[in-house]
Image 1 (cartoon, rainbow, N blue to C red):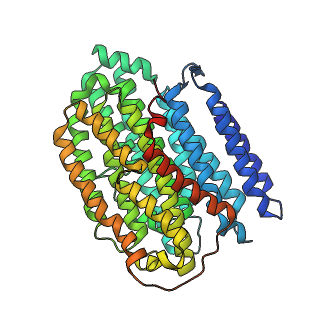
Image 2 (cartoon, rainbow, N blue to C red; image 1 turned 30 degrees about the vertical axis):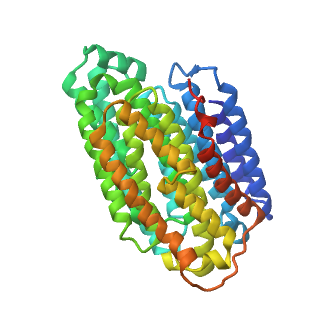
Length: 458
């Protein structure tokens, strides 16, 4: 709760600081604000609290997910060097919207009431709609914003309809009361079942699960890469944390209603995301489809619904976010220097810029789930949670699709080390370089010593 208040105030302050002529000061100020919110967030560890009559419920799970969200924001902000150097960019507005989006994400991981879930989702979504279309002179950016807005509006309508039906069937918006009524079967079963499915559909759209994924490739490609990183990490982490909260607190009592449907969506997401990614020539679109596939892996942990699922989703979110920031960071640097986002832009990067190639290699290996990287243990924990619940028929396609993922991630690695290309100098700020170092080191550390997070949630 305190981090929400502080980020909201900090966002408004940054808007006023936009009048400063020197944009160089905005980045350290924004980083200081987010770091302060991160420190304040962990003061709630082991101190569960309810705010506004249970509208917000802070527990260790929400604190952990909030920590991942704020850590990701800290890593993304320094990648804005292009906007810092451009005197005509609206840097203060971008930073403010990113902080407001983080506020919405934190509300989504801490809600104790359906209304608060909706408010958090809309604060996050509206901020992202604006950021998606922030490159006003780029037709792809305008198209991305329009598609994201229209599809998001339909998904929000479906979500609201589901919330209304749940209220009609249980007489409450409170997650605890809803869960008790559903478990005791005293509510209207038909209305509750339909409402549950509609809410899940609305949330699955936000995390790019198939068949609600059609907006993702075009929106990811058209959105400025800095904000694509935000969309790929923060939105997905918040979405799955909210889904985990909904399923464990509200809908576990009617698991038979949605488990088969969710399992089919999970397998479909894995197939579409991984198979379609293999045909892409644009690296950004490939990353978009890979983001869809990662949603499928995280859905496996939701299906398991065991005590280990929460840890699996938490670790997977952290590993995926760190690797995505690193991979997108290298992609943004290369595309800005060469004017292309295709695989060919990476040709010869291993010789011309070995440090960037190394970071991209580590992050790609992590996203592919190769051992000694954080991504390997992210998938391993997800598979363990599913194996404990005998979800073998979901695990088999998931393991096969992991092999497919190795294929298209290695396209970038092959281009960097086995093909020749132009030797173009890539100028990165010290803060930008530090982020790339942190992401690669953190990916390796979590891959070698995953036990660091083994006891984070009791």
